[in-house]
Length: 225
Ligand code: SF4
Image 1: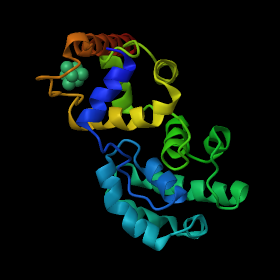
Image 2 (image 1 turned 90 degrees about the horizontal axis):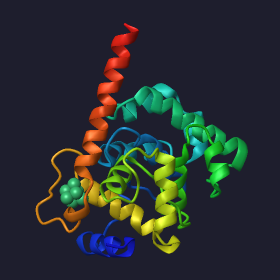
Image 3 (image 1 turned 180 degrees about the horizontal axis):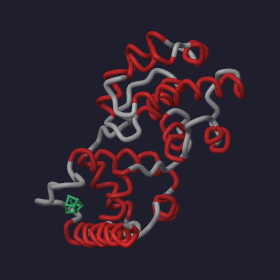
Image 4 (image 1 turned 135 degrees about the vertical axis):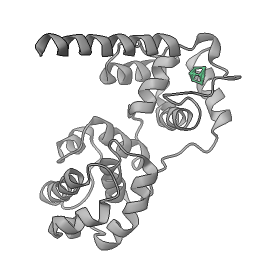
C-alpha cells in the first residue's frame, strides 16, 4: 500500500479525526498539550474548564498561587510538576511574546516546558501549519505500518513521516494515526481482525524489538548491582 492509500483507508475509518483536547484559543491549547504529557486527553479535558475559568490569560496564570493551580489540576498525573510548568510557560509567554503564542518552531521551543511534540501540535492544530507531532500513538502506528524502522528514534520517525507523506497531508495524517492508535490499533490487544494493514503489519517485529530492549536493560541493571 502507498502512504496515500494508507491515509485514505484511515480517513474512511475515522472521518472526524481531530484534536481531542478542548481549547478556545492558542494559549489554552498550549497549556492543555503540556498538561497532557503521560496522561489522557480525557483527563486533561476534565480539569481544564475550571483551570481556564480561573486563569483565562497568561497574565492570570503567571500571577496565580501555584498551590491553587495544583488544586485545580490535581486529578491528573504529575500535577505538582505540571502546575509549576504551566506557570513558567505563562511567565515566558509574557516575558518574550507579550502573552501571545508564537507560531515558529524555534520560538515555541524556547518557551518553558515546551518540547518538539508540543510545538508541533500547536503549529498544526492552531496555526494550521504543516507539522508532524510524534507522540506514543504516532510512533507505534508508524512502526507497525512500516513507515519507520522499529529501532528509529522519535526524531527519525518524524523525519521519515515527513519524507514519505505529502506535506499537505501531514496535519491530517497526525490526527488519523492518533485516532487509529487510540481507538483500534492499541498498544496492547489491538483489534487486528479484518485490519486492512494486517498483510504488512510489523506488530510482532516491534514487540520482539521492545522485548529485547527490556532484556538488555534488565541485564545491564544486574551488571551494575
Ligand atoms: S494488524 Fe493489528 S497491530 Fe497491525 S495495524 Fe492492524 S490493528 Fe494495528
